[in-house]
Structure formats: structure tokens, C-alpha cells
Image 1: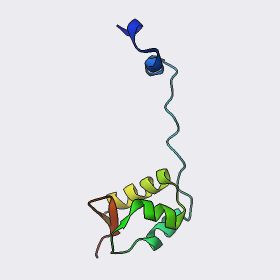
Image 2: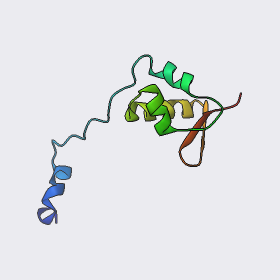
Image 3: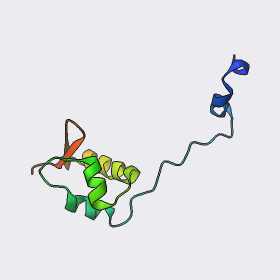
Image 4: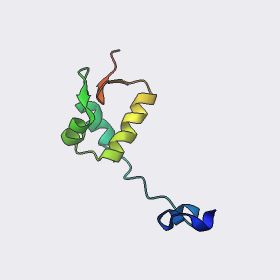
Length: 85
């Protein structure tokens, strides 16, 4: 069965195969810049990326951290806002 697998997928069966690097980790000041850019008004993630200069992978990581901590809420269309306290 594996002998007839698509050659393009052979890396998946290679014991030495390693996944691609996920992306850059957030910089020290990225969290502060993101929190400053967020408000109670929902905003698109792409707009946050443009306003803060934080890369997409680091932005997703930071938003996940804030989501787990219960500090943000998501709206339809990938809109995010600070949670009312």
C-alpha cells in the first residue's frame, strides 16, 4: 500500500520528516501593542495586523492567549474585541 503512495506525499512517511516551522514568536512589546490597539468595538484581525505590525502567526498566538484568558470575545466575520469587564 505505501509503495503505491503518491510520491509528493512520501515526506509524510519519512521517519526523519519534520514539519515546517510554525512562525515567529511574539516579540516582548507585541502584547502591549495588541492590547493598546484593541477596544470594546469589534475590529477585523487583518486590521489589527496592519495597525500593530505584528505578523499573522504571532497575532494568532497572542489572540489565542487572550481568548483562553477570557479577555477578548469573537464576533462573526473574524471580528475581535476586548471583553467588557
